[in-house]
Length: 358
Image (cartoon, rainbow, N blue to C red; front, side, top):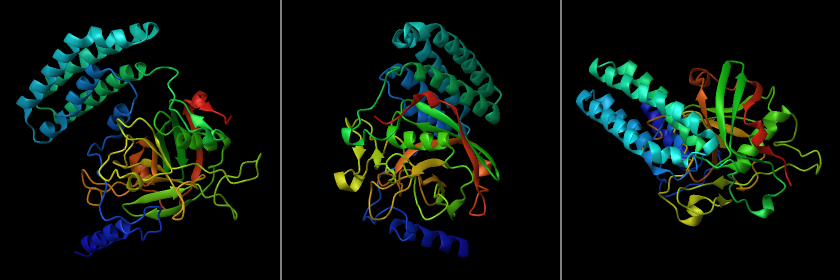
Protein backbone atom coordinates (compact mmCIF):
# COMPACT_ATOMS: atom_id res chain seq x y z
CA UNK A 1 0.00 0.00 0.00
CA UNK A 2 2.83 2.39 0.81
CA UNK A 3 4.30 1.72 -2.66
CA UNK A 4 0.97 2.55 -4.32
CA UNK A 5 0.61 5.76 -2.26
CA UNK A 6 4.13 6.74 -3.30
CA UNK A 7 3.27 6.26 -6.96
CA UNK A 8 0.09 8.31 -6.60
CA UNK A 9 2.07 11.13 -4.97
CA UNK A 10 4.72 10.93 -7.70
CA UNK A 11 2.07 11.24 -10.42
CA UNK A 12 0.74 14.38 -8.72
CA UNK A 13 4.23 15.87 -8.40
CA UNK A 14 5.06 15.24 -12.05
CA UNK A 15 1.75 16.54 -13.34
CA UNK A 16 2.07 19.78 -11.37
CA UNK A 17 5.70 20.37 -12.33
CA UNK A 18 6.93 20.13 -8.72
CA UNK A 19 9.85 17.88 -9.62
CA UNK A 20 11.70 20.93 -10.92
CA UNK A 21 11.70 19.55 -14.44
CA UNK A 22 10.86 21.69 -17.46
CA UNK A 23 7.23 20.57 -17.58
CA UNK A 24 4.72 23.31 -16.76
CA UNK A 25 1.48 22.44 -14.99
CA UNK A 26 -1.46 21.70 -17.23
CA UNK A 27 -5.15 21.07 -16.65
CA UNK A 28 -5.08 18.16 -19.08
CA UNK A 29 -2.53 15.63 -20.25
CA UNK A 30 -1.52 15.48 -23.92
CA UNK A 31 -2.34 12.37 -25.90
CA UNK A 32 0.51 9.86 -26.02
CA UNK A 33 1.48 6.97 -28.23
CA UNK A 34 0.51 3.48 -27.06
CA UNK A 35 3.32 1.94 -29.14
CA UNK A 36 6.10 1.20 -26.65
CA UNK A 37 8.64 -0.59 -28.85
CA UNK A 38 11.47 1.83 -29.76
CA UNK A 39 12.19 -0.08 -32.98
CA UNK A 40 8.54 0.33 -34.06
CA UNK A 41 8.56 4.03 -33.17
CA UNK A 42 11.73 4.56 -35.18
CA UNK A 43 10.23 2.71 -38.17
CA UNK A 44 7.12 4.88 -38.03
CA UNK A 45 9.26 8.02 -37.82
CA UNK A 46 11.08 7.35 -41.11
CA UNK A 47 10.11 10.09 -43.59
CA UNK A 48 8.85 8.34 -46.73
CA UNK A 49 5.49 8.07 -48.47
CA UNK A 50 5.27 4.44 -49.66
CA UNK A 51 2.11 3.20 -47.92
CA UNK A 52 2.19 -0.45 -49.01
CA UNK A 53 5.22 -1.31 -46.91
CA UNK A 54 3.72 0.64 -44.00
CA UNK A 55 0.68 -1.64 -44.26
CA UNK A 56 2.93 -4.68 -44.16
CA UNK A 57 4.84 -3.32 -41.17
CA UNK A 58 1.72 -2.42 -39.21
CA UNK A 59 0.00 -5.72 -40.00
CA UNK A 60 2.82 -7.61 -38.30
CA UNK A 61 3.15 -5.16 -35.42
CA UNK A 62 -0.55 -5.44 -34.66
CA UNK A 63 -0.23 -9.16 -33.96
CA UNK A 64 0.86 -8.26 -30.41
CA UNK A 65 -2.67 -8.24 -28.98
CA UNK A 66 -3.52 -11.60 -30.49
CA UNK A 67 -0.21 -13.00 -29.29
CA UNK A 68 -0.80 -11.86 -25.71
CA UNK A 69 -4.22 -13.53 -25.78
CA UNK A 70 -2.78 -16.62 -27.53
CA UNK A 71 -5.31 -16.33 -30.34
CA UNK A 72 -3.35 -18.60 -32.64
CA UNK A 73 -5.99 -18.80 -35.37
CA UNK A 74 -6.08 -15.00 -35.64
CA UNK A 75 -2.28 -14.91 -35.70
CA UNK A 76 -2.20 -17.38 -38.56
CA UNK A 77 -4.62 -15.25 -40.55
CA UNK A 78 -2.57 -12.09 -39.86
CA UNK A 79 0.60 -13.74 -41.13
CA UNK A 80 -1.22 -14.98 -44.24
CA UNK A 81 -2.51 -11.46 -44.90
CA UNK A 82 1.04 -10.15 -44.52
CA UNK A 83 2.19 -12.67 -47.13
CA UNK A 84 -0.60 -11.50 -49.43
CA UNK A 85 0.43 -7.85 -49.02
CA UNK A 86 4.03 -8.65 -49.88
CA UNK A 87 3.13 -10.87 -52.82
CA UNK A 88 0.72 -8.40 -54.41
CA UNK A 89 2.58 -5.16 -53.67
CA UNK A 90 6.22 -6.20 -53.81
CA UNK A 91 6.82 -4.71 -57.27
CA UNK A 92 5.22 -1.39 -56.32
CA UNK A 93 7.38 -1.14 -53.23
CA UNK A 94 10.55 -2.06 -55.10
CA UNK A 95 9.79 0.51 -57.79
CA UNK A 96 9.98 3.17 -55.08
CA UNK A 97 13.46 2.04 -53.97
CA UNK A 98 16.39 3.83 -55.69
CA UNK A 99 17.62 1.73 -58.61
CA UNK A 100 21.10 1.25 -57.16
CA UNK A 101 19.60 -0.14 -53.94
CA UNK A 102 16.92 -2.34 -55.49
CA UNK A 103 18.95 -5.57 -55.51
CA UNK A 104 19.59 -5.13 -51.79
CA UNK A 105 15.89 -4.56 -51.16
CA UNK A 106 15.02 -7.68 -53.16
CA UNK A 107 17.40 -9.74 -51.04
CA UNK A 108 15.93 -8.36 -47.84
CA UNK A 109 12.43 -9.14 -49.07
CA UNK A 110 13.49 -12.73 -49.65
CA UNK A 111 14.51 -12.79 -46.00
CA UNK A 112 11.09 -11.36 -45.12
CA UNK A 113 9.52 -14.20 -47.14
CA UNK A 114 11.50 -16.70 -45.09
CA UNK A 115 10.54 -14.90 -41.91
CA UNK A 116 6.84 -15.13 -42.72
CA UNK A 117 7.22 -18.87 -43.36
CA UNK A 118 8.91 -19.21 -39.98
CA UNK A 119 6.09 -17.23 -38.33
CA UNK A 120 3.51 -19.65 -39.77
CA UNK A 121 5.52 -22.55 -38.34
CA UNK A 122 5.65 -20.86 -34.93
CA UNK A 123 1.88 -20.38 -35.05
CA UNK A 124 1.40 -24.06 -35.88
CA UNK A 125 3.62 -25.02 -32.92
CA UNK A 126 1.96 -22.41 -30.63
CA UNK A 127 5.51 -21.25 -29.88
CA UNK A 128 5.13 -17.76 -28.39
CA UNK A 129 8.84 -17.01 -27.74
CA UNK A 130 9.72 -18.31 -31.20
CA UNK A 131 7.01 -16.15 -32.78
CA UNK A 132 8.31 -13.05 -31.00
CA UNK A 133 11.89 -13.68 -32.11
CA UNK A 134 10.90 -14.39 -35.74
CA UNK A 135 8.63 -11.33 -35.86
CA UNK A 136 11.38 -9.10 -34.51
CA UNK A 137 13.84 -10.31 -37.16
CA UNK A 138 11.26 -9.98 -39.93
CA UNK A 139 10.26 -6.47 -38.89
CA UNK A 140 13.92 -5.49 -38.71
CA UNK A 141 14.33 -6.42 -42.37
CA UNK A 142 11.14 -4.57 -43.29
CA UNK A 143 12.57 -1.54 -41.51
CA UNK A 144 15.81 -1.89 -43.46
CA UNK A 145 13.86 -1.72 -46.73
CA UNK A 146 11.90 1.27 -45.41
CA UNK A 147 15.15 3.09 -44.66
CA UNK A 148 16.09 2.74 -48.35
CA UNK A 149 12.93 4.64 -49.25
CA UNK A 150 14.16 7.82 -47.53
CA UNK A 151 15.81 10.24 -49.94
CA UNK A 152 19.58 10.39 -49.44
CA UNK A 153 19.47 14.18 -49.37
CA UNK A 154 16.42 14.43 -47.09
CA UNK A 155 16.62 17.39 -44.70
CA UNK A 156 14.02 19.20 -42.63
CA UNK A 157 13.68 22.92 -43.19
CA UNK A 158 15.20 24.70 -40.21
CA UNK A 159 14.64 28.42 -39.47
CA UNK A 160 17.61 30.58 -40.42
CA UNK A 161 17.92 31.87 -36.85
CA UNK A 162 19.43 28.49 -35.93
CA UNK A 163 22.05 28.42 -38.68
CA UNK A 164 24.87 28.59 -36.12
CA UNK A 165 23.89 25.23 -34.64
CA UNK A 166 25.11 21.82 -35.80
CA UNK A 167 22.49 19.46 -37.18
CA UNK A 168 22.26 15.75 -37.91
CA UNK A 169 21.11 14.54 -41.31
CA UNK A 170 19.68 11.05 -40.99
CA UNK A 171 20.35 8.92 -37.93
CA UNK A 172 23.33 8.06 -35.77
CA UNK A 173 23.98 5.07 -33.53
CA UNK A 174 25.89 5.61 -30.30
CA UNK A 175 27.28 3.40 -27.58
CA UNK A 176 26.91 4.92 -24.11
CA UNK A 177 29.53 3.32 -21.88
CA UNK A 178 28.57 3.65 -18.20
CA UNK A 179 29.87 2.36 -14.89
CA UNK A 180 27.07 -0.24 -14.96
CA UNK A 181 27.60 -1.38 -18.55
CA UNK A 182 26.79 -0.31 -22.09
CA UNK A 183 23.69 1.12 -23.73
CA UNK A 184 23.07 1.41 -27.47
CA UNK A 185 21.07 4.43 -28.61
CA UNK A 186 19.81 5.85 -31.91
CA UNK A 187 19.64 9.64 -32.38
CA UNK A 188 17.07 10.70 -34.98
CA UNK A 189 18.12 13.62 -37.14
CA UNK A 190 15.17 13.14 -39.47
CA UNK A 191 12.77 14.52 -36.88
CA UNK A 192 14.97 16.37 -34.37
CA UNK A 193 17.97 17.50 -36.45
CA UNK A 194 19.17 20.27 -34.12
CA UNK A 195 18.81 18.32 -30.88
CA UNK A 196 20.20 15.08 -32.29
CA UNK A 197 22.93 17.16 -33.92
CA UNK A 198 23.88 18.80 -30.63
CA UNK A 199 24.01 15.44 -28.86
CA UNK A 200 26.09 13.72 -31.54
CA UNK A 201 28.37 16.77 -31.80
CA UNK A 202 29.04 16.79 -28.05
CA UNK A 203 29.50 13.01 -27.96
CA UNK A 204 32.02 13.28 -30.81
CA UNK A 205 33.91 15.95 -28.85
CA UNK A 206 34.10 13.70 -25.75
CA UNK A 207 32.08 16.26 -23.79
CA UNK A 208 30.10 13.62 -21.87
CA UNK A 209 33.08 11.46 -20.96
CA UNK A 210 33.31 11.02 -17.19
CA UNK A 211 30.19 13.05 -16.35
CA UNK A 212 27.95 11.80 -13.53
CA UNK A 213 24.26 11.09 -13.63
CA UNK A 214 23.19 14.18 -11.73
CA UNK A 215 19.56 13.28 -11.31
CA UNK A 216 17.71 10.00 -10.94
CA UNK A 217 13.98 10.04 -10.26
CA UNK A 218 12.54 6.56 -9.86
CA UNK A 219 10.02 5.77 -12.60
CA UNK A 220 10.70 9.15 -14.27
CA UNK A 221 14.11 10.29 -15.56
CA UNK A 222 17.85 9.68 -15.40
CA UNK A 223 19.76 12.83 -16.33
CA UNK A 224 23.35 13.72 -17.22
CA UNK A 225 25.31 16.29 -19.22
CA UNK A 226 25.99 18.87 -16.51
CA UNK A 227 29.73 19.65 -16.88
CA UNK A 228 32.10 19.89 -13.95
CA UNK A 229 32.49 23.40 -12.56
CA UNK A 230 30.13 26.39 -12.45
CA UNK A 231 28.83 26.04 -16.01
CA UNK A 232 25.59 24.14 -16.64
CA UNK A 233 26.02 23.63 -20.38
CA UNK A 234 28.44 23.55 -23.30
CA UNK A 235 30.54 26.66 -23.83
CA UNK A 236 31.26 27.24 -27.52
CA UNK A 237 35.03 27.83 -27.76
CA UNK A 238 34.53 30.29 -30.63
CA UNK A 239 31.86 32.53 -29.09
CA UNK A 240 32.78 31.82 -25.44
CA UNK A 241 29.03 31.65 -24.83
CA UNK A 242 26.86 28.77 -23.71
CA UNK A 243 25.35 27.10 -26.77
CA UNK A 244 21.58 26.86 -26.64
CA UNK A 245 19.39 24.40 -28.55
CA UNK A 246 15.71 25.28 -29.04
CA UNK A 247 12.75 23.14 -28.09
CA UNK A 248 12.16 21.12 -31.27
CA UNK A 249 9.06 18.94 -31.79
CA UNK A 250 7.60 17.39 -34.90
CA UNK A 251 3.98 16.30 -35.17
CA UNK A 252 2.84 13.86 -37.89
CA UNK A 253 1.09 15.55 -40.83
CA UNK A 254 2.07 19.03 -39.64
CA UNK A 255 4.07 20.85 -42.34
CA UNK A 256 6.46 22.62 -39.97
CA UNK A 257 8.45 21.55 -36.95
CA UNK A 258 7.54 23.39 -33.75
CA UNK A 259 10.43 25.47 -32.43
CA UNK A 260 10.28 26.95 -28.92
CA UNK A 261 6.55 26.25 -28.67
CA UNK A 262 4.90 23.65 -26.47
CA UNK A 263 1.77 21.75 -27.44
CA UNK A 264 -0.14 24.00 -25.03
CA UNK A 265 1.21 27.09 -26.79
CA UNK A 266 -0.25 26.01 -30.13
CA UNK A 267 -3.38 24.29 -28.85
CA UNK A 268 -2.34 20.71 -29.63
CA UNK A 269 -3.54 19.29 -26.35
CA UNK A 270 -4.12 15.76 -27.67
CA UNK A 271 -1.37 15.51 -30.26
CA UNK A 272 1.21 12.74 -30.40
CA UNK A 273 4.68 13.83 -31.54
CA UNK A 274 6.52 11.88 -34.20
CA UNK A 275 9.05 10.94 -31.50
CA UNK A 276 6.96 10.37 -28.36
CA UNK A 277 8.08 9.77 -24.81
CA UNK A 278 6.45 6.36 -24.93
CA UNK A 279 9.08 3.83 -23.94
CA UNK A 280 11.86 3.09 -21.49
CA UNK A 281 15.00 4.88 -22.63
CA UNK A 282 13.49 7.69 -24.69
CA UNK A 283 16.24 10.31 -25.04
CA UNK A 284 15.08 13.79 -24.04
CA UNK A 285 16.71 17.21 -24.02
CA UNK A 286 16.56 19.17 -20.77
CA UNK A 287 15.85 22.87 -20.46
CA UNK A 288 15.15 25.13 -17.51
CA UNK A 289 11.80 25.91 -15.93
CA UNK A 290 12.19 29.52 -17.06
CA UNK A 291 12.78 29.10 -20.81
CA UNK A 292 12.23 26.70 -23.69
CA UNK A 293 15.35 27.63 -25.67
CA UNK A 294 18.11 27.28 -23.10
CA UNK A 295 18.82 23.56 -23.34
CA UNK A 296 22.56 23.24 -23.91
CA UNK A 297 24.07 19.84 -23.11
CA UNK A 298 21.98 18.14 -20.45
CA UNK A 299 19.91 15.17 -21.59
CA UNK A 300 17.80 12.59 -19.87
CA UNK A 301 16.63 9.05 -20.43
CA UNK A 302 12.93 8.60 -19.78
CA UNK A 303 12.25 5.80 -17.30
CA UNK A 304 8.93 4.59 -18.66
CA UNK A 305 6.64 3.17 -15.98
CA UNK A 306 3.28 1.84 -17.19
CA UNK A 307 1.33 3.08 -14.17
CA UNK A 308 2.77 6.59 -14.51
CA UNK A 309 2.48 6.67 -18.28
CA UNK A 310 -0.57 4.59 -19.22
CA UNK A 311 -1.19 3.80 -22.87
CA UNK A 312 -2.55 6.91 -24.58
CA UNK A 313 -1.36 9.43 -21.98
CA UNK A 314 2.01 11.06 -21.48
CA UNK A 315 3.31 13.70 -19.11
CA UNK A 316 6.32 14.92 -21.11
CA UNK A 317 5.22 14.94 -24.78
CA UNK A 318 4.94 18.44 -26.17
CA UNK A 319 7.00 19.98 -23.37
CA UNK A 320 10.46 18.53 -24.09
CA UNK A 321 12.24 17.35 -27.20
CA UNK A 322 12.61 13.61 -27.69
CA UNK A 323 15.52 13.02 -30.07
CA UNK A 324 16.08 9.27 -30.05
CA UNK A 325 15.83 6.01 -28.15
CA UNK A 326 17.89 3.49 -26.26
CA UNK A 327 17.53 0.31 -28.32
CA UNK A 328 19.70 -2.09 -26.32
CA UNK A 329 20.99 -2.38 -22.77
CA UNK A 330 17.73 -1.89 -20.88
CA UNK A 331 18.93 -4.07 -18.01
CA UNK A 332 21.85 -1.64 -17.59
CA UNK A 333 19.56 1.39 -17.78
CA UNK A 334 17.41 0.09 -14.95
CA UNK A 335 20.47 -0.25 -12.70
CA UNK A 336 21.86 3.27 -13.22
CA UNK A 337 21.59 5.92 -10.51
CA UNK A 338 23.24 9.05 -9.14
CA UNK A 339 26.26 7.06 -7.96
CA UNK A 340 27.07 6.15 -11.58
CA UNK A 341 28.83 7.94 -14.41
CA UNK A 342 29.09 8.02 -18.16
CA UNK A 343 32.49 6.58 -19.02
CA UNK A 344 32.21 7.73 -22.65
CA UNK A 345 29.76 8.08 -25.52
CA UNK A 346 31.02 6.90 -28.90
CA UNK A 347 29.30 7.45 -32.25
CA UNK A 348 29.51 4.07 -33.98
CA UNK A 349 27.50 4.91 -37.12
CA UNK A 350 26.10 7.99 -38.83
CA UNK A 351 28.67 10.57 -37.74
CA UNK A 352 29.07 11.53 -41.41
CA UNK A 353 25.54 12.96 -41.20
CA UNK A 354 26.66 15.56 -38.68
CA UNK A 355 26.90 18.99 -40.29
CA UNK A 356 28.82 21.79 -38.68
CA UNK A 357 27.18 25.15 -38.20
CA UNK A 358 27.03 27.54 -41.13
